[in-house]
Length: 344
Image (tube, rainbow, N blue to C red):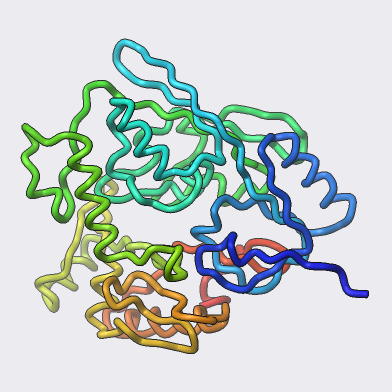
């Protein structure tokens, strides 16, 4: 008799009909550790998942999937800052809104980013001129190999653009994060409609509402249309490469970085290839934002992969810029850490 499998369709925002051999909801570190130990005894794969908002399952999962739902928010008010200790299973957007209602500013630029708080450091989530690392003080992890919890400070997290140590340490289960928000609030008004706001009179709630409006106007709601937000990272190129592209494409959006690189807008590059609306099977390039791939109905993992391959090929051929995925690929036995060309 074949083993019973459990649906993960509601646990991945692409809405793919994926299953796992076992599905566990964990509200304590001990539950996570117990599930991990069981997976070792049974010689089965193990996957710790938040909201499934940045993963693409390529196959049914042959082991245990644990949904991290460790809750709790603690506030420590100090003279110059608010210190927050937040459970990994708290919804990120709800945390942003909750802090603002408490009169605690500083997270508004990261509004409406889907997922759980514990996923924020993994990807070093970012939007509208801000990244998680800008407010991170520490990350508490459970070392699955030793069963010991430890606290990593911001430097130990090795944050980069959509990157961190947590992508390369599979035995680190994030259980909480520490956030430091200065009381000397300064609005970040660099991108999009934010630049139209008055920096002297603007409030954090105005920034929050503006960002929510911008994101809703160009990003589909995952509850209505399966997607993971931005499928590709905004590429970083050399200054010389950016200048060469500007000669051919004077309107190309570009953002110089402190490390001398230049960030390009992946959505713009895809849009210039006229790929909006391109459909393969049940997967489509979103009409309102070319950076988003959507499940228009009954898409398979392979549909999405083939669409992503096509997008990447056209952008590479036109601009000699090869996009890298922001989404994480999950196979039957765990996350793929192979070079991207092995998948796309």
